[in-house]
Length: 313
Ligand SMILES: [Zn+2]
Image 1: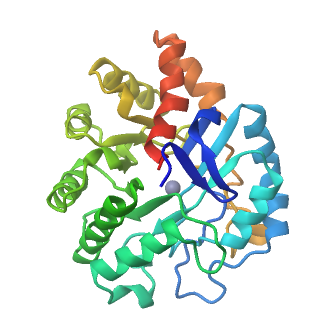
Image 2: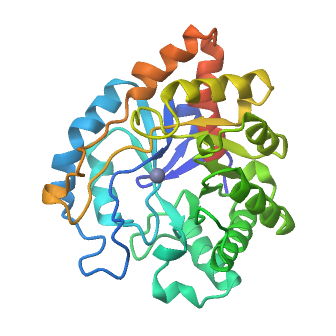
């Protein structure tokens, strides 16, 4: 595999050509679960109608690439992603993987870790379903008190697929207790933790626990930017970022909004609180970081270099 490229929905993109990149967003999400009738269905044109204003605003804010984190079980829809990728200059990266236990489709529950890894490797190296589009990373998720045994299987499969392809693993993980257990499983499986992203690391309020994960080599992703009603408040996300910079781990921090998205089952696909856009990082968070003395070189590292390195293959 060639070095230093992203595998996007429209094909390979050299990381040198990228500017600002959002490592955790959503375009299309179905949280009703894969057992529900109509799961994951949506007309690409309707999705585009809902999301284009947000995508245009992101383009204007300088966003050049966006990682779609809705994986198998929570609505991954390649028809939609391919359509959107035609309409925007923003490179879209699609995942392989599965979400947490409650969302794992029946057909994938009885597979061994090895068989699951084979499926994911196929999606990373050959293509997803019959699209010929290759996944660009592995997205998994842990239950809040996890990992459960089935989620340990996801971790082992992810470690195996990552070792084989170089793809990064991004795992939804609430709090440091689950993160520690997950890092232990991945280390035992032989993964270099530099290929692991602790998604939602801001849910751990103890900054010492965050630093401990960074010391072990993991990426920490603070991905609630602009989500004013979520825990913790936005100023804490700034504190967490500055703390990791001060501790010498600025090269392992990722920043994103976890925003979007079209939601099947809602009228016109509009989420109950409306579509949340992808520009609070540029409009609000980076100015707050600069006000804390963070210089442009570091801003660039956090928003350009880090995500490009994390997701490069
Ligand atoms: Zn998310």
